[in-house]
Image (cartoon, rainbow, N blue to C red; front, side, top):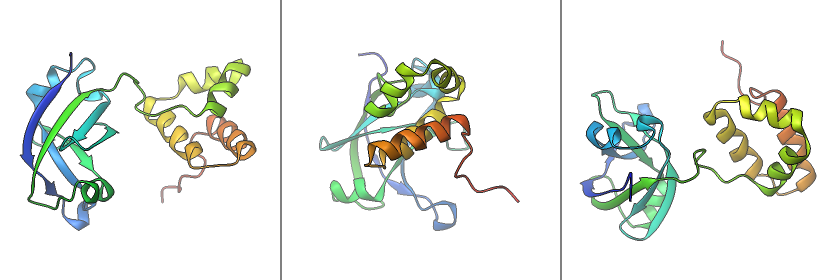
Length: 160
């Protein structure tokens, strides 16, 4: 399988002032083997128990890291400093996020909206999909989707 990597590593945690995230280092040699290099979306499997979609973040020394949420750490009963077995593979979905059925239908029915959506960066698209996925009411999903695609910065705090 292309873009597949398996290893074990001590999980670390960033300082609280830097976000406090748990993370695993992915070395630059591994990243260079991925189809889209550092922009490849991944599926990470931890201790053979849970899987989640993720992306690569710059570590600052030429290597990269993936973030593990506190929720996922609890699910595998691990803490900072524990050994974790992990597998990463390339996510077949280049966005790294599921497109809600409401959004899919909306994009199929509205060519102008689809064109605007297609012009957005993958990160903006992901952000829209995550926000819409949180909404249960279909009518509200439609309104939010249209609003976010027409104004992708909607709902973001303004920089001072």
